[in-house]
Image 1 (tube, rainbow, N blue to C red):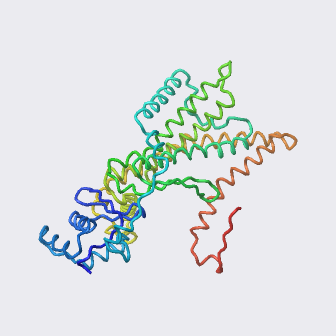
Image 2: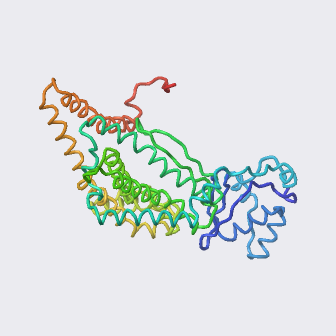
Image 3: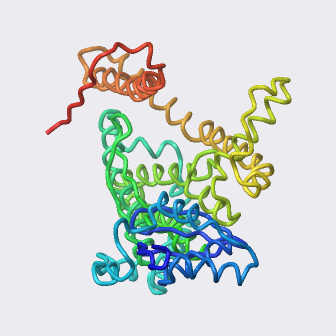
Length: 407
């Protein structure tokens, strides 16, 4: 059958230096091939039968190719249509459907929209220069005297803002013609939104930055709009109204998520920007493994080091000097805890304790008591669930595992 063309799924070919990233956009299956291997695959994807492609490869590169092994690899990657010839595929292939919301994506990232975003940021900067109380402060989180209202107001108030962040990623992908999807999930009892950037590796590297950075850009615009709303809704005396105080509280949560992106020891938006700019395929795992190995060697325990050959030479080379950026991310996290999270927690506890001192006959007592229970729950329960998840299987009772959902 080597004289019959092989039927392939629609493949993308993106040059990355001396290598080429080849993949299926519909399944997000990718492989990094040397230039000659990608050229051979391209010839076959264009309809050249394997035996003719092998002769072309030998005449072009002066070497023979093991076509059996090459085709086996392509089958394992899912690039080949099973049980079809190229002629059959040509008549049976389905045309790609219309991409929803692409018009909105183009409008959201148009030059006019960018001008509007910059104008919003400039307006907030001017307002913050005139009124220093617009600058984010931990005390802005407490927009009312009731800690329970603060807890649930912040919890549910920031959900649409997180949705906007992830929707920006999705729209940036749709703008490039990718079928990026936005979904909702949970981490324990926390609601989270997730964006799947399907097909991002099928576009040029220079076009991948906007999908990664669009979420942070959205945060800047939302933060500025909330600050302007607080400034425009002041009372006649110049104080913030309830709407303004809520806006500033939500703006502080937006700022915390923006700073969180600088924790480069995690796979944050900025991490993917770094990995893309440095042309690395698994910079996170390579750099953290190299950093741990270095620490184990300094401690005199080289046996605990992992095998570094499982990553590409380029990832290892970049990972050796990317380690300090991981430590920088840890410092950013510690700095934010000291300057942001700790002051909020201290003020929260102080207000709760003041309520408890009022006695059971006052509403402040019960507000403080429930607030402290909620605080302990938010802090302790996720850690406990994470510990249970990581427990060795042998410590768990044997038997079927049943899962129920809320209908």
